[in-house]
Image 1 (tube, rainbow, N blue to C red):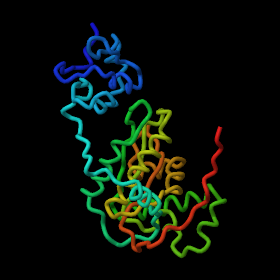
Image 2 (image 1 turned 90 degrees about the vertical axis):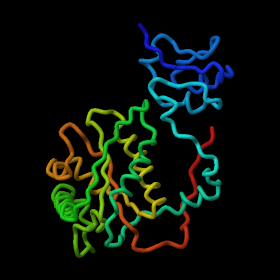
Image 3 (image 1 turned 90 degrees about the horizontal axis):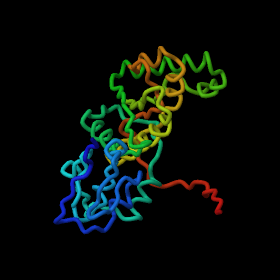
Image 4 (image 1 turned 120 degrees about the vertical axis):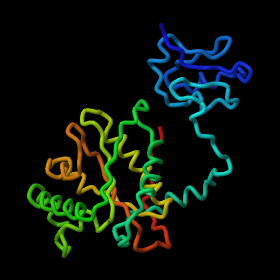
Length: 264
């Protein structure tokens, strides 16, 4: 027997069909009131579109009850200009203060990343946060050695750096690593999106980030490095961000190349 997916408050439902229109899998049809197909419960992504889009609060999804959904505060909606400046002013930070990032701040930032989109709302991303200075230093040393041994083309990165390991993590106090199960096919994409959320949430909290591409490459190829990170067997690192308080602030927004667009 099929399980019921939707609970409808018939006194609130206006039969406007919005819930049906926004369902990404087309599971909701408008009969006397909205209802799902027989396989609706099994096929539902639990994305919450139906609950979020109903302007009347008439529907609850058994996989995502309305009571667990956050109200959208219109008074917090930013202006277009403020969003554009926020995005344009983001910078990759490579000089950090010698100041620890409070764990509750990092938790708040990672909590924001829970809302990053993922394939079929699978929410596959898990995180490793490195806080220990001795482990940060160890990771720098291991990655620098691996790059010099296995990727000689990267030797130029170390030419003018007195402490060669610092080119890897730039003296950041923290490292945030995104990973998924190794067999998950959309790991690169989903982790990149989630890390972008982390990057912007960090800026909103007065922190700076920089993509740790060299460390990511090394961790993907070298088991000693991934084990030092604490990556579980069967999981793969897809990206990482250095995290810390910027040593310097920035007063201008440098230009970028014009967008290359082909209109069809």
